[in-house]
Amino acid sequence: MPYIFRGNLRAYLCDECREPLRGVIVRLYRPGQERVAGGDGDPHLLNAHEVEARATLLLGEATTSDDGSFTVRIDDDQRYDGGEIVVDVRVERIDPGQEHAPVQVSLAVVKPEWQKGRDSYVYDWRFVVAARIWCYIRRWFDAWVICGRLLTCREKVPVAGATVRAYDADWLQDDALGTAVTDAAGHFTLHYTSAQFRKTPFSPGINVELTEGPDLYFKATLGPTVLVNETQSDGRRRGRENVRHCYCVDLCTENARILTCALTGPTGCVTGQAGLLPDRVLEVVTGTAAGSIFSHYTLEALYDGNVVAGAVIYPGGGGTPDPAATQGNTPVVSGTLGWVDLQKLAEGAGAGLATSTTFTLTLRVFGTGGEEQ
Image (tube, rainbow, N blue to C red):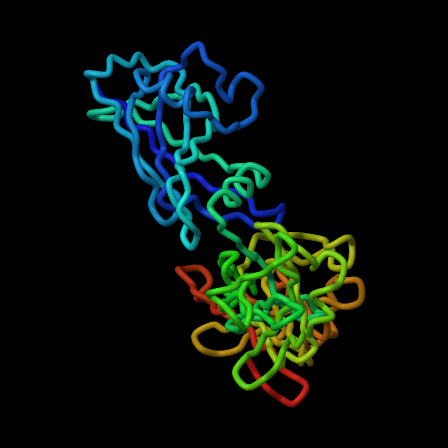
């Protein structure tokens, strides 16, 4: 039966940021006598002689999709016995980037634990390339990347849908490097090449950049609102000057008028709550209620469309249950919003609780001007 080697490849840009390896060629080999990644447990670049030497050991290859996934089929005619496999990745282009001779990296020696299926053996594998390897490869292809996150300064709430622009603080003119839009978590990724920060008023005839990397500063907007408005002087701060091919940054804003509202669940029952409510069985409700204009939030437990009075208990001082509280007065980010008193819920549902019963939880977040999310 054939062997199906399925995998996914990603690479670190920094400790907080990864990207999928798109459009790279994954090659599977039988182990040979030459030095491979498994020799010291660390991926390494191969020279042309090493690549040529393992050509006769090739079991199969495939190109990764946009999310870094790939599938390699090893057919019976390869006479593979299910043993160790050397995994290489060959990079022929990084977009956007410039032309360069292909680069091949030996990633790992893998001992697959094959699962027998109906008509093949299958193995699933995941690997993340270290930043020092991947960013070194990016350098060869003149492929530069900025990975960042935009949050509110005080509450650390992600700002979604914002347009972020990056610039190089040049002596002759400021070079626009590119634009990106933040996702739901406030993340953005911006790709560029050195041509974008080596421009002069005389480009393309004369391009000048005395240092290797750009001196970065940023601007960000959300609709008509200016969230971040850095200047050239920010690009000349320590840590922003002459950045490398992979650069990660955290930006914050005091100007975002946002409310964030998300229910991630009831997550299970607790009893006692450190002795504060020893006779209650409580369902923990988690999520996010925050924002730069946060005022308070409310939770409602509904049965048959009607609010069950007294069923919700909010956090008080120190985050412990406060049965006297009528709303949540402290911002919560991916934490405990409150508790549902299951006894009160049962009383509100009446006889219906003995059969199949559905309850609805509603979260509302309010801003300082009465705004509701």
